[in-house]
Amino acid sequence: MTFTLIANLCIFLMTGCSGKDEMKPLPQDPVDPGKGGTIEYAFEASPVWADEFDYSGKPDASKWGYDIGGSGWGNNELQFYTDRANNASVANGVLTITAIKEQYEGKNYTTARLVTKGKGDFLYGRFEIKAKIPGGRGTWPAIWMLPTENAYGGWPKSGEIDIMEHVGFDQNRVHVTIHNEAYNGASNTQKGNSKVIGTATTDFHLYRLDWTPKGIQGYIDNDLIFEYANGEKGYSTWPFDKKFHLLLNIAVGGNWGGQQGVDDSIFPKSMEVDYVRVYKMTEKRN
Image 1: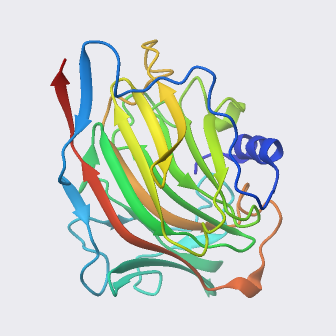
Image 2 (image 1 turned 135 degrees about the vertical axis):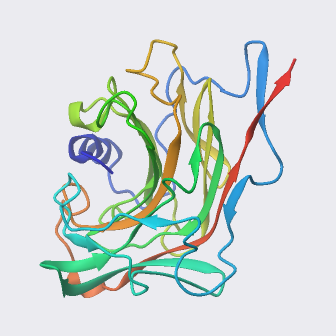
């Protein structure tokens, strides 16, 4: 979600706004990070970390914290992120993050940005998030990851992984993207892919990331959407050898989300999350 204006505008212009299910071609040199070499990587069958949202009230404080504030978050976003139950709550087996049109702390919208930093920090693994995302012009939901420690420096040097990103004006097109020093939105060199899912904003879908020392793969409903291989050229292309944490949020407006303005008549708008599951990576000797 950081500094993605140029990058995502490029993606938008390349992919258009078709209502048909379609997908851009995969990269020309995809590498399956689960194969090759002398070690095959696999994942444990049971999650090492999970939230099934089988309780009621605010999100589990042992698993989730909050980013709070209305600074614009590097993208000229319009919301104020809060830790209020109005903006993030759990009921009926679902986490609901809600963007509301209201005056709060000098901003015209409130919403929430949940983070697992310090409570769920991971190096490699399989990440599964089942979610239904909001539509409507001006919404900008994301399921993503940031480094827990900026070991290689500030963004984009230490990396970013966008498991799912969507803007409401481009109905149902879902993006999977990575950023690093060599490839990032600020320089229009990001690596990513997108697919139109006809029911992205009306049904739950499974957003999955497989991350190993060999590479990163992004899936939607277990269909491979994007691959990025570790070229072993150093941190500028592979800062993904340090711990990252998860983020769930809805932004309002901003450089990308607000590219076609904000339709105030749509609010409140919510992202619903059925579960978040993280599976530990294992090694299988050939």
